[in-house]
Image (cartoon, rainbow, N blue to C red; front, side, top):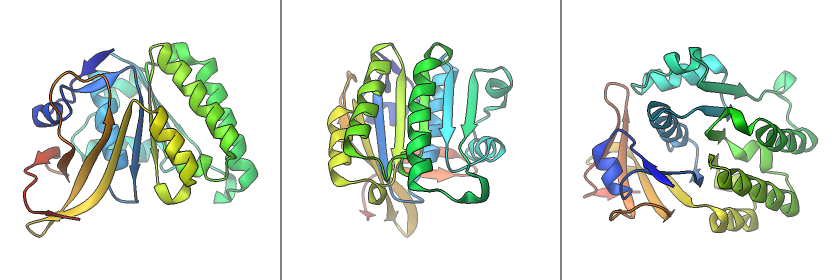
Length: 233
């Protein structure tokens, strides 16, 4: 395991040195808490470190995903054109998801990652909520076991999810199995809306870390760490 710098010194210091690779990372948060922006920053840092990344998104097209990265001062285009960043959007014709389709896509995603694991170092599934909200516990446990096997093969797997869309017992299994478990919440500081990142679990780092980190996602400055004093959730 090695630590990948997130290109923001304050964030690296708050996390104990950087982001661990390989690892199984889970990022929990409601809508609008910055899960996608945080994972995009992690992916970009992995790309800058020479790794290859695969993003599976149920929330954006390829163009939208690339534009979101550019909106927070990240330039993914060279990596996308060069083939080191691959984005797979999951869409259902007519936008009509069902229990059957969610379960099917969930299994297809797992099999795809296992079959083509030699093509990537980092995988992001954003978001797991759509794929796993109707998944039986035993299927989800199988999925987590397979993802842990990929981590053993040297991969980093990053899963984002909305807590209201997953069963409590599934969230507990995910929390127990993850090497990194982060929770994002909306907060307010001095009248300004920010994101509060809570570090629930973080294995593999070497320095002291903070339990809570306040973040601002600014279209002019990108992602940055703010002083924690005066934060209200």
